[in-house]
Image 1 (cartoon, chains in turn orange, green):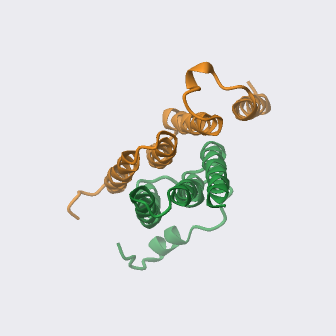
Image 2 (cartoon, rainbow over the protein chains, first blue to last red; image 1 turned 90 degrees about the horizontal axis):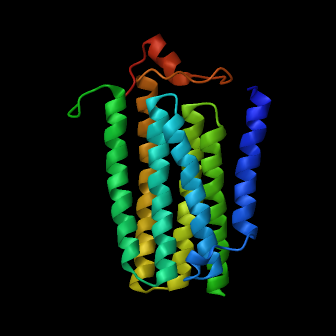
Length: 120
Length: 115
C-alpha cells in the first residue's frame, strides 16, 4: 500500500472518530453523568488509544518510553475529570500518586536507556 | 463566572491532550515526539487541573488539584530532558531533516560535557 493511501486512511479514521465523539448521541451505558463529562471521557480514551498505538508500533525503545510517559499524564487528567463528575475528592489523590510513580519510573527508564548502572 | 472559565479551561486542556497525542503519532523522530509530549503536559493536563481548581474553589479538593499541577509542571521538563539524553546516548540518531546536532558536535570536538 502506498504512502498516500495510508495517510488518507489514518486521517479519515482519526477525524471521523473525533467528530463522532463530539456530535453523536452518547451510548445509554454512560447516561449516569452529564453529557459534557461523558464526551470528555470518550475524548481522553481516544487520546490514550493513540498513545497505545505508538507503544505497540514504536520503532525504538525511547519512543515507547515517551508514549508511556504521556499515558501517565493522560491518566492524571482522567482522574481529575472523574473527581469532577462523581464529586469524590480522593480521585485527585490517585492522580497525585500516579504522577509520582510515573516520574520515578520514567527517570529509571531514562537511566537504563543510557546504558549505565543505577549508582553512577 | 468561575465555572464558565473552568469549563473553557477544561475544553482547552482536552484539545491540547488530543493534539499532543496526534503529534506523538505524526512526528518522524524521538526528539520531536518528546517536544509534542511536553506541550501536552503543560497546557493539557495542567489546564484540566486548573479548571478543576476553579470549580472547587479553595476546598481541600481544589488545593490538592493545585498541588498536583505544581508537581507535574516541575517534573515534566526533568523527565523529558532525561529521556532525550538517554535516547541520544543509547544511539538513536536524529531524523534526516534535522539541521543541527550541537550535542554530537561537542562530543566529537572533545569538550567535556557535564553529566
